[in-house]
Image (cartoon, rainbow, N blue to C red; front, side, top):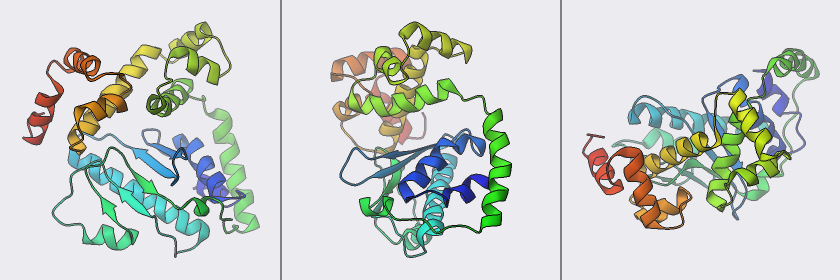
Length: 257
């Protein structure tokens, strides 16, 4: 589509990925893709939720394949990630996917995504034909102008990042958008959301994904969901799900969750 064509007008792959993730809602509003550069090796993280674990895994697999194809389209077919991780258990057969990525593929991780060499982000994309660029801009600009902006979606994406850093209170989010807390609450209310509701939803998603997709200790999952202690996480989980995290994991492993 038009977004993909305009990715080729970016100065670097990093800029192209940022453009892609920023305008992703024009093509797939239910998909979250983020470029995380807090570590030595950058990560492209993706989150998709489907009706079943099997459908979620399949959708995530297709998404990571699509991102890899996008980067190969930008800089050449020789590109391959350093590592691919899935927050799902390994299926019985995976030869096709491993051959496609041409790199190690790990399962039952905390996140699903691609690990890149940092030098890839500074590569310059191949430029598309001038008439295609003109056509893409003509199609994309009206869509951007009609887009409502999705403030609550932006807050949710920011919170997912801040949750790992520990600074995820409403004041930190308000400071990021350079507004006060009252304005933050009002703008979220306009979208039918509340700060606490978004935070609760994110925590529940992160906890379920981590419990179902890895053997990580509960203390690590407590940290991933933004809790300072395992006891606080355990009380929150019991209140939110009506059972302990250990019980939830056991039921999920047995297919009863």
